[in-house]
Structures are given as C-alpha cells and as structure tokens.
Length: 462
Image 1: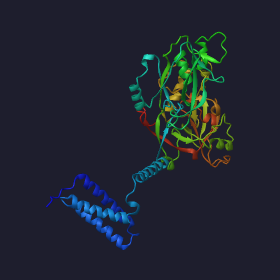
Image 2: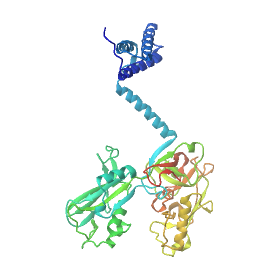
Image 3: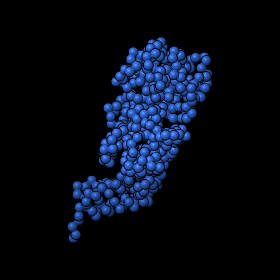
Image 4: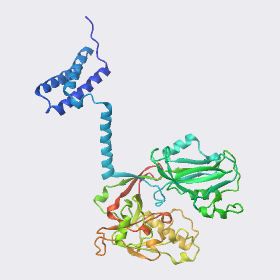
C-alpha cells in the first residue's frame, strides 16, 4: 500500500483560493442558480472546507475535493470563477480611481505652486546656481537632490569655442515653445516652455526651461551680478556696432567642453488643499486660498471693475485673501517713500488698510507692513523677513479706496459675494490689483499642508 503524502503549504494555499472563490460565487449567485446547482456547489464548498480544517491534510484527498469544487465552479461560477488577472487588476484600479477622485473632490486636492507670488510664505520654483564648474553636482548627487528637493538639473555645455552670446528673439530673451517626449509633462504630454538660444563661435546651443521660471534674472545674476537682464549691457561691454540682435554675456573666451551656466530648478511647494472646510465656514481674510480663474473676468465685467488686465484662462491660483465681502481696502504710501530714494522699479511700497486699520492677523500682513515702514525710514534697510512690502498699484493705487462686492449690495448685479486676493510677494504677483475680485463660487479651499519637498517649510501652512 502506497503511503499518502501530506499536502505542501503551497498546495493548501491554492486550495484555499479555490474555496474563497467558491464561497463568493455561492453567495452572489445563489438566487440565480437552480436548486440542483446550489446543492452541488454548496456540497463541494463544504467538503473542501472540511478537508482544509483537518490537522493532517493528504495530497490525494485535497486534490479530489479541490477538483470537485473546480468542476462545479466551471459549471455554475459564472464570472466569479476563472477571472483573468487583468480583469481583477482593472477592477482594483477603478476602485482606487474612484476613491482618489472622491478624496480630491470633497476632502483634499494636491496643488503645486509654480511661481513665487506667495514667497516667502510658499515657494514657487527656485533656482540653485552653480557659480563654478567644479561645483556642478555629480549624477548621484543630482539623484539625491531630485528625491529630496524635486530638483531638476540644467546646464549649457559648449560644443564650440569663442565668446558667449544670448540670441534675442523678437526683442525678447526667449521664444515660446512646446516640450515633447521625453521632456513633456509625464514624459509624453506637450508642455509649454521658454526656449533660450545661446551662441558660441557661430554655433547655437538651445536650453528649454519651464514657462513659469524666471531665467532672465538668473542669467543677469550669473554674468553681471544684477537682477535685471536689461541692465546687463551697462555691466558687460557689448561688441562695437551692437545691433540688439544678440547680447554678449561675458568678456571671457570659452572653450569646447566648458559649462557656460549650470543650475537646478527646485520644485515649487506641493500642497494639499483643504476642500471641505469652506463647505461649512466662509473664507476669511488671511486665508491662503486656492481658486479657479475661469469666471473672474466675467464677474468683474458685470461689476464694472476698472481692471488693468484680464486673466483670459481657466487655471488654479493661490493667493492670500485680504478682503471679505463689504470690506473697504486702501493702500497708503508713506510720504517719505517719494523723496528718500526708495527703489520703486517694482512698485511703490505702501501699507495695506482693511476697514480703516492696517491689516493684521497673519505673519505676511505684519511683515509686509514692517518692511514698508522700514523703507520709509531707510531706503537701504536690510530685509531679514524677505517680505518685500505691499505695492500700491492698479485697483490699490496710492490712497484709492475699493469696496469688496457683497451680494447684499443692490448695485451688485452678479448676486455673488466677492473676495480680494493678493500675493504675499507683492512685487512679483499679478493679483487682484490687476484683475479684480474673486467670486465666492470659484474659491476651492485653503492651503492645508506642504507635503513636498522635504524642507523647513514641510508641514502645516500658515
């Protein structure tokens, strides 16, 4: 008599999977099967279950009961048996997608800040310039920076020798372009970029950077130690007979293989936006709010707002709310600002008033006021906080008073409340001063937490 062998662990696991499918098919198809089919399927399920409960399970017994249930499932299991793995994977992905869409629609939504209009409260894309060629990171170092900081590396490595020029494009520093594979969004989706053309020894070298990135300032800093690229000819001598078609960037003679410029672009702060709170409470002045821009232009047309510009597209913006429905807002420039030599090339510093008092309650409000007051006393004052001071322009020109629209106002033809939003970095923010008020139904939520990159700003937002 042949000695029976005990079933292996893998065989027991396979039998348990068949049993699981049998119980599932029985539970879901009992009401559509005939009584005879139910009886046979239930009997096969119970027999395999009893076998699996034994202390010692022999291979022969296990195979017999598993094959019996397998036969009944082929007869009566329908789609609950012998599903292909890709079907189950699609089901799993669909469920996951539904969960993600639900969370994004009702609870939190991810959002990446591209620009620096909210700096230093939130960072947009930031440059890290390598001044010397030996400072350029290795491949491994770039990988670590990519993981921790979301850093993308850029460089112009020369394939020729001679003087370095920036070829101007229709009077500007770059030309708009579309990045395609493998540099598009998610590698395959075309993405808007700025395309810069450098020339050395008659050979062009092309560099593409994200459309929102301020590469002009980086070029000016690298080659002239200034912020405004337009002022570079005042620092770097141009060729005799300079026509304005190309800009000489340096007096240095470059060689093949030199790196003319190398830098990283650090990813802007990635946020989770709280979409739920505003379903229960109204947005408040001081909230860093995310909103859509699609109906802002039409809203302000109906209000008759004397805007300086229209947005013209439907995008997500993040700004800080500075005015609620019915609020009176005013920007007052200290008199000394006009006479003490304060740099006003990026706007005239002023103190923002809300309902006849300097706005307060948030760090950004207080620091912007402190900066303006410091400039009023000393135009060369240091700026440890990095907040530049609010700037008086557009709807908030010096001493102009605006009232934030309220739906209770009989002159408001929209029937909606409005809010006024500004960037914390007033010198580099296209905000409500230019395009007007934000309708309440476009406000999505408030910035909740910075989840990436892993910097000192990681955590709950202010």
